[in-house]
Image (tube, rainbow, N blue to C red; front, side, top):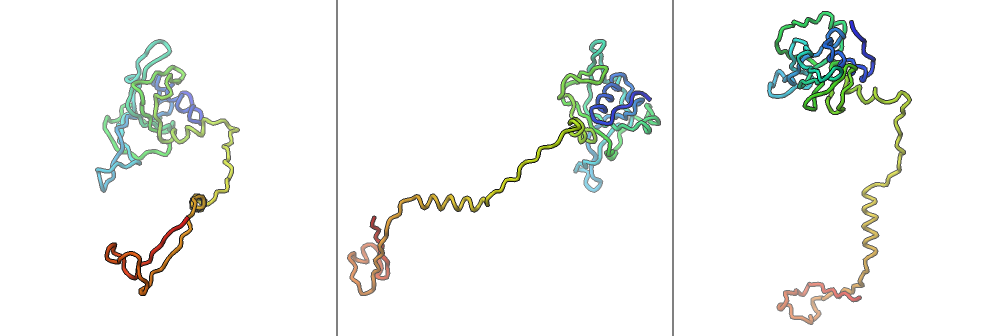
Length: 217
């Protein structure tokens, strides 16, 4: 076999791109196949199943995807690849596999690499010039953030702040606003049946049982 990639994500992606550059991906344990999209549920073919993908059974030949720019740089063009690093399986995986599509379950160590730009420019060391070139999901995508942090990194802990109930805050604010409004003193005058009203009932629709209220500052 060829070079063995490191255990973290940067080692994997760089070793994979180095293998792609030299067209030795399979020899170095990388089974890379062209991916066409997600599979569908058996009971409803119209719904995509996120655990299933449709791939070409034949492994990618990178000499058809890579074009040299100069002695150290090359362009890499593809749409999306499904990559599994499995050196043991790769030794028995035939390059001349049947050129047909098949639906497979995503391996727990399988990664989906999509080209997010028109093309990627890579070098013989596996480095690439544009960090936006690849959109990676699956095993490499999950491992990416954690594996790129320093070993001694400790995540910060946010202090626990004692919070008052939001409803109580609104109630207190409304009460303060109400108390700040100048109040008027009101004197209520009740009109009984035997009391003679100052205003004829019929003229303004006031009944003998009405209550009259006058407010005085």
